[in-house]
Image (cartoon, rainbow, N blue to C red; front, side):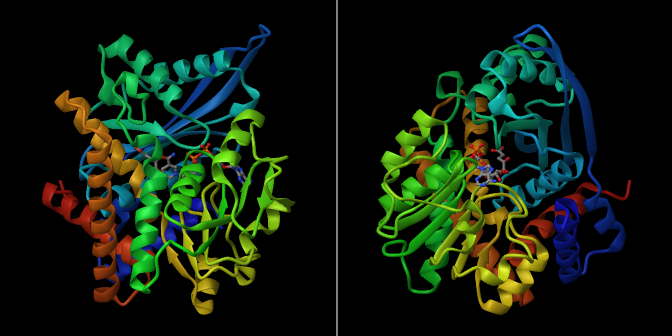
Length: 411
Ligand SMILES: NC(=O)C1=CN([C@@H]2O[C@H](COP(=O)(O)OP(=O)(O)OC[C@H]3O[C@@H](n4cnc5c(N)ncnc54)[C@H](O)[C@@H]3O)[C@@H](O)[C@H]2O)C=CC1
Ligand SMILES: O=C(O)CCC(=O)C(=O)O
């Protein structure tokens, strides 16, 4: 199912459970603004290349719009729209004072040189600089982008508006980035997983994990889960998949991946078919790469007891239904991966205050926010007799609806 159709379907189900007024429901679904720009850059060989960039600003009822920028060849308007909408519900689930946005450029970052990536990022920023801002829309990294990308956006934006570190989060620490932001999404995944397992009298220790994706989110999740005593038995990335039933050595895998631009060829495990990674025998499955990977074609074969959605919208609604019948518990994206945007919020607060927190404070506050978001979601599950996805959606949608009504949406 198309990402936008899937996300909107979940939203509509939540709106129904909440008994939202139909006009309000429609207004919450429609994005505030959709931006599409053409970015033409000279390549290193002197030829010109054009890329299409997007920024969808979904909702700002609760505060400035917030969300990452993705560089990936599959970036397209419907997906960016879905991701922007998810950000609106996610920031509300985390109860941080933001709305939702998302952006992206349709490109293959691995095929571009560093200087080409810099030129592309600067041209994209030139085209959107008057529509983002500290109190309007604050970008951050997502798939295919990182702290360096944010540094270029910050620099380009500052040429127009003066030095403005709070215009992006996920920046390098040297430019006002927060300690702990790099690990934050993975650490939030750890805290959310601990909260879910605790409900069933379990801890991370001794559980077998399978992780799809070994980028920012997947690699930090793998590292922190291993430190907490979990056994990561299989991991995939775009280059391949590796399995070791005794537990992969994550530190060695990270070194291999950095030196070889991927996990393929790692000798601390057996190479396995990436397509069957999601259906490997394990206790906890963590998709941490692309959307729509758990769908009606593979849901029935999934053997994990728990799915922790570190990626955005990895599970199709059809798969949700199949997995529910099998008794698989899914911790939804808008809760499970909210640690990233939560520490982005801490970064923004630090930039505005001009005061830097130590890493221990960042991690402690993150745990407080993740634990509270989990508890608030569970309360919605009890009051609306629904699963965790609908618990999180009703929580987020209800908070945004309340803010919208309070601000006087009827004009
Ligand atoms: N970076 C962040 O703070 C946050 C990221 N997310 C989500 O987490 C997911 C991963 O994002 P990042 O780790 O930041 O991206 P990244 O670009 O750092 O890493 C992406 C990883 O996915 C792998 N991958 C790509 N295609 C694949 C495939 N077909 N099969 C297996 N692996 C594949 C890549 O090889 C890479 O290891 C995305 O869905 C993103 O939206 C969600 C919240 C915050
Ligand atoms: O840190 C942020 O502002 C946004 C992170 C993000 O794009 C996401 O949570 O999907």
